[in-house]
Image (cartoon, rainbow, N blue to C red; front, side):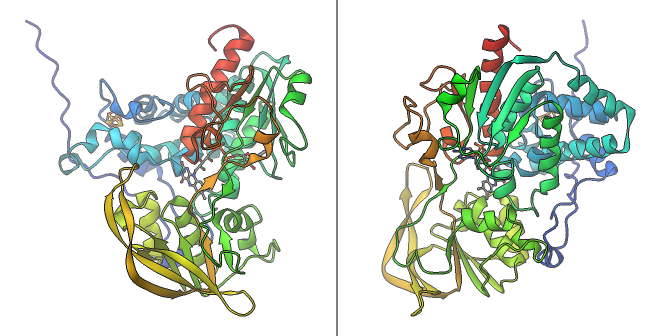
Length: 487
Ligand code: FAD
Ligand code: SF4
């Protein structure tokens, strides 16, 4: 009788910590907080992966990266091999390694996370992904022959100039479409309304979480593959979808995000000193207001700042305000800390840096002085009621209990909506009840034949990787139609 193979023993080895700038140092600069693994850190963390026969981690990844495969290559010390596995699924690994909510995706499914007290916790997949992408880029820049050979293979493809595809919007959804199709030799042009490509990656997520040089590096790699980027082009104004089809584009992908800020409709919201998070972060990130006097972009500063909301956007705005010199930054949130939708790591980093939580309250009024300059916010105290449709407990006002918070700047980060410019200018484009584009979940095709959509403009505000997943599905379908086979 054949003996059963011995089950690989799981040893308790703690996750390898990510080196980071100390909190009191990093609030005085705009450099990246998390510093990345060293080679020794990466080897130690990769060795924790037990190379499961049926890896659950992959099921947790929206683009189904062969996680076991790339970590397996790392275990063998084959960095280009690890990078190749990643790039086969993800065109922005250095970005995803930094901003994906791994704790609820791949790492949330990793078998080692099921009994952390016995294993030390799930493999730090995101940190390894970042390590592979960054180290590969550094080696490529140094002229490493194996890395050059790998990129050379990617660039060596059959050009098909007669097949051209347009993307409107230059965020992660469109970039994924562009990267995928360009690698097959299809000519892709991306039309972006702003003066820089990257979407939220450049205008929303701050430098201290995602250095812009990394986004530019990924975009340059696409340019090298032949993708054309046209900035300052507003789809629906400067160019219409029908015009693109008439010009011979074989397909059009709409990846315009959901960047229209939502306000709260409470009195005093138009006082001077009340901003949407979108405007505040765009001035600082895209306009580089943090880098005065090299960039002279006006930005509003105050000693006391309130940020309304509890998601990643709120954390980014609060941490930005601290770096711009605020003495007190409050997160005003109507539920409790436990219900905040922000990534755990972002919330903890914000608290370490000194951001103060004002939970179970919400603005009733933004109070201004005689010049309509914000001086304080009147807050309604709340308690938690029964769970609502989102499964979280509904915040309920406590009758008659209010307080006043003295602040000179308030940043509203309570969500966004689709911008109507392109949608209204595209006859026949079917929208859902919430005003987002209706697209086939498998192919991304909209109600207009040959016009596809994906990312936040279909789902509402979501994540970078889900936008990329939608882009990948649409790109596959476009490639299938244009090339006649499953690409
Ligand atoms: P976007 O990234 O919004 O890109 C759309 C692009 O289209 C923009 O560049 C826009 O200028 C352009 N555009 C709009 N209208 C037009 C038009 N008419 N013509 C031409 N161009 C147009 N997700 C995570 O996974 N992790 C995070 O940590 C995280 N943090 C976030 C922090 C902030 C501050 C914000 C705002 C979002 C964050 N998200 C995060 C969400 C994530 O960034 C988005 O889900 C993702 O970027 C959506 O990608 P997209 O390509 O659909 O759209
Ligand atoms: Fe490795 Fe965890 Fe994936 Fe198993 S589930 S292959 S241990 S990363």
